[in-house]
Image (cartoon, rainbow, N blue to C red; front, side):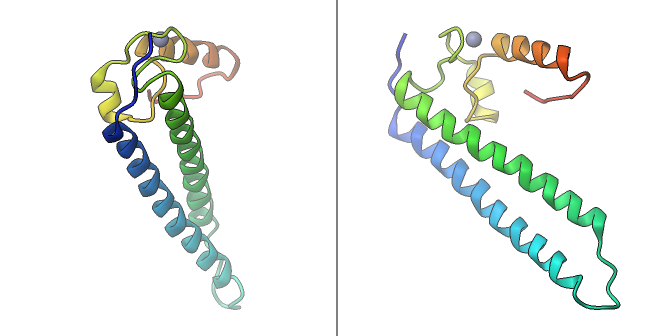
Length: 125
Ligand SMILES: [Zn+2]
């Protein structure tokens, strides 16, 4: 089953990517600022803060990747089509995560598999 992606759907994904990229830029600036502080002798580097920013950056980079992937998938197989089973992805899922490329069943299945080797790493859908 192939559903053509509409301009609006593509725009939604691109807008989403734009937002995440903006956020990434801000975080990278924050991180740079944290490193610059270190040069000042009496300023203790805030390692926790830095780790937090780095973790956020990592999460957002992964988000950008999945949005890019969703855009590619949308153009190839259609928007809102599960790349695993070809079923329609639940509209309410797409509303929350426009970049999702798996239906809820396949997502659960992939999480179940992921859990079996990386014990207890929690993921939201
Ligand atoms: Zn599926």
